Image 1 (cartoon, one colour):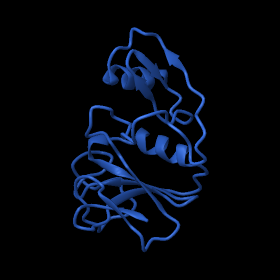
Image 2: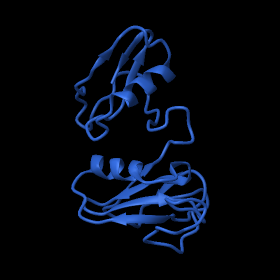
Image 3: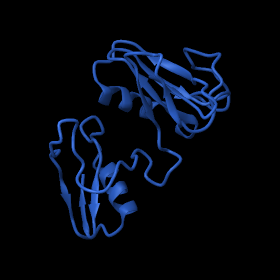
Length: 157
């Protein structure tokens, strides 16, 4: 479904066509400006829509640069409008301490088939969950990076 706010409103967006992967969609949205006003993105397998809260866009506190306007979504993404079959909703977490990450649960990160991801074990000098998130972001290659696991003194990207 398409992302909606607490009132069920959809968001204004920058639409990018011919996007082949969810990772490329996420990286493209991250590359746009004004991330603090970006609510998330919708992806339907080929079209990526980077979502902005009402009255804002990639260039600041106005809607210039937006492809799709007229929606009034504000604040956090809280749900997905299930009537938009085939579209997936992803919330942007720039409001939280871990800029590009959402807490999924305790334990190892796993894919949809319950398989472990390949990972990089960072040095034990990373001692906090915030430090782990930052160290993983510093590695770059966001297209291939899907998350991190922090367990005591161990950080895995």
